[in-house]
Image: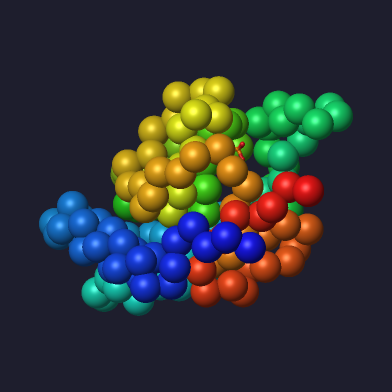
Length: 171
Ligand code: IMP
Ligand code: MG
Protein backbone atom coordinates (compact mmCIF):
# COMPACT_ATOMS: atom_id res chain seq x y z
CA UNK A 1 0.00 0.00 0.00
CA UNK A 2 1.15 3.49 -0.78
CA UNK A 3 2.04 5.47 2.35
CA UNK A 4 0.32 8.85 2.23
CA UNK A 5 1.35 10.18 5.65
CA UNK A 6 4.13 8.52 7.62
CA UNK A 7 4.07 8.16 11.40
CA UNK A 8 6.52 11.01 12.01
CA UNK A 9 4.57 13.45 9.86
CA UNK A 10 1.36 12.58 11.69
CA UNK A 11 2.99 12.94 15.13
CA UNK A 12 4.42 16.35 14.28
CA UNK A 13 1.08 17.65 13.05
CA UNK A 14 -0.96 16.20 15.92
CA UNK A 15 1.42 17.78 18.46
CA UNK A 16 1.02 21.08 16.63
CA UNK A 17 -2.78 20.75 16.76
CA UNK A 18 -2.64 20.00 20.50
CA UNK A 19 -0.64 23.20 21.08
CA UNK A 20 -3.03 25.24 18.96
CA UNK A 21 -6.03 23.95 20.90
CA UNK A 22 -4.32 24.58 24.22
CA UNK A 23 -3.64 28.15 23.17
CA UNK A 24 -7.25 28.73 22.06
CA UNK A 25 -8.57 27.32 25.34
CA UNK A 26 -6.02 28.96 27.62
CA UNK A 27 -8.75 30.75 29.56
CA UNK A 28 -11.09 27.82 30.04
CA UNK A 29 -11.17 25.61 33.08
CA UNK A 30 -11.81 22.33 31.37
CA UNK A 31 -11.98 20.81 27.91
CA UNK A 32 -14.10 17.76 27.20
CA UNK A 33 -12.85 15.71 24.27
CA UNK A 34 -15.58 13.61 22.67
CA UNK A 35 -14.06 10.79 20.64
CA UNK A 36 -16.18 9.45 17.79
CA UNK A 37 -15.59 5.71 17.82
CA UNK A 38 -14.06 3.79 16.41
CA UNK A 39 -11.90 5.63 13.92
CA UNK A 40 -10.80 8.52 16.12
CA UNK A 41 -9.38 6.53 19.03
CA UNK A 42 -5.74 6.70 17.94
CA UNK A 43 -5.94 10.38 17.02
CA UNK A 44 -7.54 11.27 20.34
CA UNK A 45 -4.97 9.30 22.33
CA UNK A 46 -2.11 11.22 20.70
CA UNK A 47 -3.88 14.58 20.72
CA UNK A 48 -4.80 14.29 24.40
CA UNK A 49 -1.25 13.34 25.35
CA UNK A 50 -0.03 16.46 23.59
CA UNK A 51 -2.24 18.58 25.83
CA UNK A 52 -1.76 19.60 29.43
CA UNK A 53 -4.13 19.06 32.30
CA UNK A 54 -7.81 20.10 32.38
CA UNK A 55 -8.73 17.50 29.77
CA UNK A 56 -11.60 15.05 30.23
CA UNK A 57 -12.56 12.42 27.69
CA UNK A 58 -15.73 10.68 26.68
CA UNK A 59 -16.70 8.38 23.84
CA UNK A 60 -19.58 8.13 21.44
CA UNK A 61 -20.29 5.54 18.77
CA UNK A 62 -22.56 6.24 15.83
CA UNK A 63 -23.57 4.54 12.65
CA UNK A 64 -25.13 6.19 9.64
CA UNK A 65 -28.48 5.07 8.48
CA UNK A 66 -29.64 5.48 4.96
CA UNK A 67 -31.30 3.55 2.24
CA UNK A 68 -28.97 1.59 0.02
CA UNK A 69 -25.54 3.05 -0.46
CA UNK A 70 -26.60 6.63 0.07
CA UNK A 71 -25.92 8.04 3.50
CA UNK A 72 -28.72 10.24 4.72
CA UNK A 73 -26.36 11.64 7.28
CA UNK A 74 -28.80 10.62 9.91
CA UNK A 75 -26.96 8.82 12.65
CA UNK A 76 -27.95 6.29 15.21
CA UNK A 77 -26.19 6.12 18.55
CA UNK A 78 -24.63 2.78 19.26
CA UNK A 79 -23.05 4.19 22.36
CA UNK A 80 -24.07 7.51 23.82
CA UNK A 81 -21.91 9.69 26.03
CA UNK A 82 -21.64 9.02 29.74
CA UNK A 83 -21.19 12.68 30.58
CA UNK A 84 -23.51 15.64 30.40
CA UNK A 85 -22.40 18.38 28.01
CA UNK A 86 -24.24 21.15 29.74
CA UNK A 87 -22.14 24.26 30.15
CA UNK A 88 -18.93 22.49 29.14
CA UNK A 89 -16.34 23.27 26.49
CA UNK A 90 -16.64 20.37 24.09
CA UNK A 91 -14.40 19.35 21.20
CA UNK A 92 -15.61 16.55 18.93
CA UNK A 93 -12.70 14.40 17.79
CA UNK A 94 -13.22 12.71 14.42
CA UNK A 95 -10.94 10.73 12.15
CA UNK A 96 -12.07 12.11 8.79
CA UNK A 97 -14.70 14.40 7.36
CA UNK A 98 -15.85 13.18 3.98
CA UNK A 99 -19.35 14.23 2.82
CA UNK A 100 -19.81 15.93 6.20
CA UNK A 101 -23.25 14.40 6.69
CA UNK A 102 -22.41 12.35 9.77
CA UNK A 103 -20.64 15.19 11.49
CA UNK A 104 -23.36 17.67 10.62
CA UNK A 105 -26.01 15.52 12.24
CA UNK A 106 -23.84 14.72 15.23
CA UNK A 107 -23.06 18.39 15.85
CA UNK A 108 -26.77 19.18 15.86
CA UNK A 109 -27.50 16.56 18.48
CA UNK A 110 -24.59 17.62 20.67
CA UNK A 111 -25.45 21.31 20.34
CA UNK A 112 -28.97 20.56 21.59
CA UNK A 113 -27.40 19.39 24.87
CA UNK A 114 -26.38 22.96 25.68
CA UNK A 115 -22.56 22.88 25.82
CA UNK A 116 -20.91 26.20 26.59
CA UNK A 117 -18.92 25.80 23.37
CA UNK A 118 -18.70 23.17 20.65
CA UNK A 119 -15.86 22.75 18.20
CA UNK A 120 -14.59 19.92 16.03
CA UNK A 121 -11.13 18.53 15.33
CA UNK A 122 -10.61 16.13 12.42
CA UNK A 123 -7.36 14.48 11.53
CA UNK A 124 -8.24 14.36 7.84
CA UNK A 125 -10.54 16.21 5.48
CA UNK A 126 -11.59 15.42 1.91
CA UNK A 127 -13.09 18.77 0.85
CA UNK A 128 -13.84 17.64 -2.71
CA UNK A 129 -16.41 15.19 -1.34
CA UNK A 130 -18.31 17.64 0.86
CA UNK A 131 -22.11 17.70 0.54
CA UNK A 132 -22.85 19.88 3.53
CA UNK A 133 -20.89 22.81 4.82
CA UNK A 134 -19.98 21.66 8.30
CA UNK A 135 -17.72 23.69 10.59
CA UNK A 136 -14.41 21.99 11.45
CA UNK A 137 -12.18 24.31 13.45
CA UNK A 138 -9.11 22.06 13.50
CA UNK A 139 -8.03 20.00 10.49
CA UNK A 140 -4.85 17.93 10.51
CA UNK A 141 -4.41 17.26 6.81
CA UNK A 142 -6.44 17.98 3.69
CA UNK A 143 -6.32 15.05 1.30
CA UNK A 144 -7.53 14.09 -2.17
CA UNK A 145 -10.53 11.86 -2.73
CA UNK A 146 -8.84 8.52 -2.03
CA UNK A 147 -9.80 5.83 0.44
CA UNK A 148 -7.28 5.76 3.26
CA UNK A 149 -6.61 3.41 6.16
CA UNK A 150 -4.41 3.29 9.25
CA UNK A 151 -3.95 5.39 12.39
CA UNK A 152 -7.46 4.39 13.49
CA UNK A 153 -9.10 4.32 10.06
CA UNK A 154 -10.31 0.99 8.76
CA UNK A 155 -11.44 -0.93 5.79
CA UNK A 156 -13.79 -3.72 6.98
CA UNK A 157 -12.34 -3.33 10.51
CA UNK A 158 -8.80 -3.95 9.27
CA UNK A 159 -5.72 -1.70 9.27
CA UNK A 160 -6.69 0.49 12.22
CA UNK A 161 -3.40 -0.38 13.91
CA UNK A 162 -1.09 0.86 11.15
CA UNK A 163 1.13 3.64 12.56
CA UNK A 164 0.90 5.54 9.26
CA UNK A 165 -1.89 6.41 6.83
CA UNK A 166 -1.95 4.48 3.57
CA UNK A 167 -4.04 4.58 0.42
CA UNK A 168 -6.07 1.43 -0.06
CA UNK A 169 -5.61 0.28 -3.63
CA UNK A 170 -8.84 -0.11 -5.48
CA UNK A 171 -8.46 -3.23 -7.58
P1 IMP B 1 -19.28 11.40 6.11
O1 IMP B 1 -18.45 12.65 6.35
O2 IMP B 1 -20.64 11.45 6.71
O3 IMP B 1 -19.33 11.07 4.65
O4 IMP B 1 -18.62 10.15 6.80
C1 IMP B 1 -17.40 10.17 7.36
C2 IMP B 1 -17.10 8.77 7.86
O5 IMP B 1 -16.89 7.88 6.76
C3 IMP B 1 -15.81 8.79 8.63
O6 IMP B 1 -16.03 8.98 10.00
C4 IMP B 1 -15.25 7.41 8.32
O7 IMP B 1 -15.75 6.47 9.24
C5 IMP B 1 -15.76 7.07 6.96
N1 IMP B 1 -14.75 7.36 5.91
C6 IMP B 1 -14.81 8.32 4.96
N2 IMP B 1 -13.72 8.32 4.18
C7 IMP B 1 -12.93 7.33 4.65
C8 IMP B 1 -11.64 6.81 4.24
O8 IMP B 1 -10.97 7.27 3.30
N3 IMP B 1 -11.16 5.77 4.97
C9 IMP B 1 -11.85 5.22 6.03
N4 IMP B 1 -13.05 5.66 6.43
C10 IMP B 1 -13.60 6.70 5.75
MG1 MG C 1 -15.73 7.67 11.65
